[in-house]
Length: 359
View 1 (tube, rainbow, N blue to C red):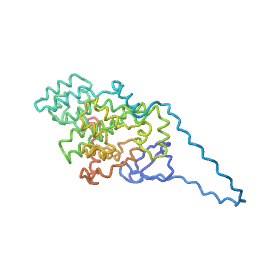
View 2 (view 1 turned 90 degrees about the vertical axis):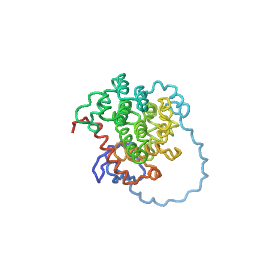
View 3 (view 1 turned 135 degrees about the horizontal axis):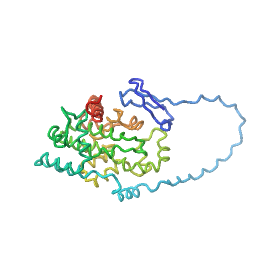
View 4 (view 1 turned 45 degrees about the vertical axis):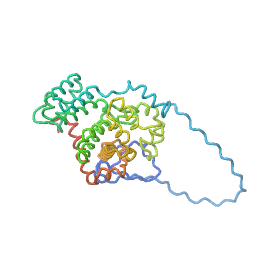
């Protein structure tokens, strides 16, 4: 079913099975925050029945004992499933070693650009992605950036660190995720939006956190890469639970798997040697109030919500996404800040994914 925003006239294509509501629903438009209404078709009231002679009261039958839910055919859940996933960690997409090594070099104040360029030379695929991003419409400079060393000199080390994180995760986040209904590139665009939003928010509150905020935002949904095949195996169960329109994917994951993608991503972060501060932020990016006042968790949460409101989310799940009401006050942000950041995020994603010179 196609839903059109009456204010900005943007059209959203929502699967019919996700529109099986028993009540009227109003969604905020991700593009302009106007209201999109879905009205439930109600049957006409039936005429009153003819009065009938009273029948002798019959004793009420005993209620039958509830039938136990049939066991899922998809396999184990909870700790058993998580243990199985963690045992097969070698089969999961690895965080490229070149990214880890380069981050170590950039963390060394005595390191130089040449040392960084030498690391890139060990992985030509990463180097090629860095150059492609450096020459995008967003990062493009006068003349073509022809080498990683040139990019380091022209763009600076902090920007190069940003490009490095992006280049190291592009292939991972560009995959098609059948279980989540994400086409190739959907998760990548969302990750870019959250990364840039987190960087902007961190810059307003604590500039020292900007790099970590960008990285955490970039990989905050890495758990979806891990859980996708398990969700695909349980497709019918997920669709049955989600069909009422009131459950989010996060609810379904917890109920049907025993944990959600944020939790499994935090566990895998340890295998990827991601710093604990980032792992905590990723673990609680949907529920920052449970993070023990972790500022980075609140930053990624707000950035995630802004990406959803920007239309860079995942269909109706994005339209139903709700920001924790305590998150903005915790970060000393106002509603008008959200609108400003949203505009910057949309521009960033559009220009970063567009080659330099393209219209």
